Length: 127
Image (cartoon, rainbow, N blue to C red; front, side):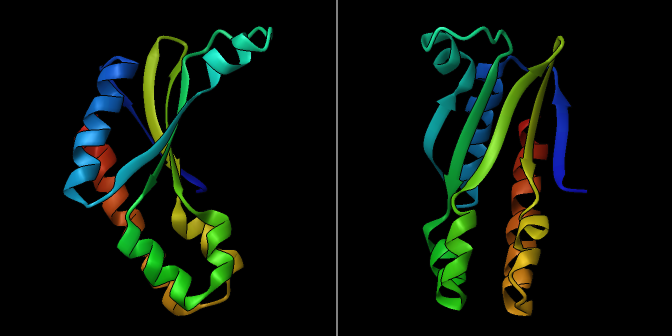
């Protein structure tokens, strides 16, 4: 599968706060928060689904993978999503291991697996 997504009983804001807190435990920080619903509505477009993209990064991990192969920068920072699907809040991300397959490098694939495992743990703790 390309993604890892879970459901939560939390609101969008509660889920984001929980993610931010749990990301810190893994030395990840939120670089940017993009509220797609608000941005599209600001541009006069109709989109009524709460949908927030968090761009997250652990600088040490970013340095490790970039030192292996600069092309990995195309996949940085990692993206996490918090959105409403009908009445259910979901938290998810594209799996780093799925993205990194285009870079044919076993060491980078191992690093991506480690990062993925840690981010899955963050998502699970946040739901």
